[in-house]
Length: 384
Image (cartoon, rainbow, N blue to C red; front, side, top):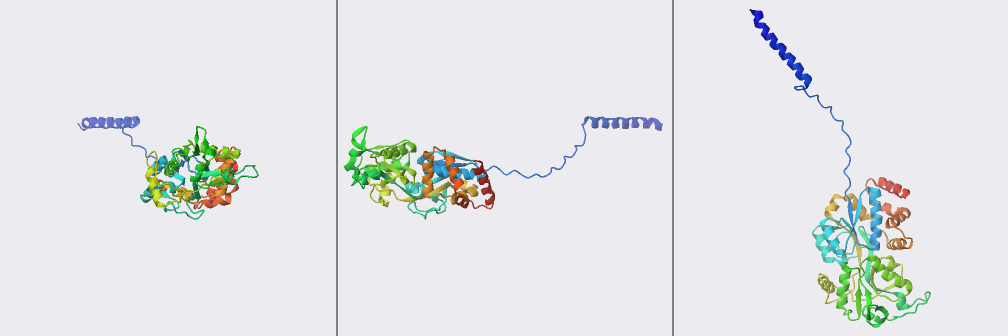
């Protein structure tokens, strides 16, 4: 009786055991094998943010861009890019953060924008926020141009002659913009011979609007037409070509540039700058036809590196370098000249300067890993 009762039980146990074996073989109820503990590895640092530089399309600014970008790319490892734009475009993109750095900000030309946005904390002057007419000592941190002069120039040989070139003075009493009236036949506009011609600042730049405003205030449109080149190359050609030929011309320009600093040029006098005049011209340049009730000379100032404030907070190492960066006026003008005379690319101009001036650029680098950055730059320069 007992054996009869045990047989079904044993049979059930046997069937159950066989089922468990089959299930295990098929993986249906297998206990998962624990994953081996991962061995910690060093994390790769995140890539550095690409630095977007404003390219205003003029010589000294191209020098700054070439030199600074080479150091940041090859010493620090930052990717960089240039964004072309007029003054008006730069005023928008720098505030909004589409552009991060403007290495040559002429604050005296855009005083309201500068003061409004530095005070709002949207942009940051690496030289510190000061009144746009305040000039800092040459080579101050954050400064890129120590003396930024601008106005209407004529070749000095027109006023004083040039015995070496056999040029006689054709306008010995020419001292001011108003004096141009007495010599307008010397500056005759080929398309309108009854009037003289003056080359203005580049179309779209703030100085183009300011010059238009003061030209109206001086009542100079009655005697002179204003011609506006479309780019810096055209403006430069409009000065260099006639100068080399010993011809008469009058043109807006600025310094330090190779065009002015490496030639004998005379800046024409204008009424002295004052606050009332500045306010009148600020109103006039808001919309065409840019007509001011009062006109006066540009204030003499300096140019600074101005950056987007949010970007600066994210990139303190790049900001420290840009604050320390400074190329003196003479080598700055010479690099512009070398570009043209030797038919070089801007990066080649930068490389030549960096190879010959390690005692200067090494002072721009003050990071904790300074020796490593300098070694990387030396390595890159040696390979060029």
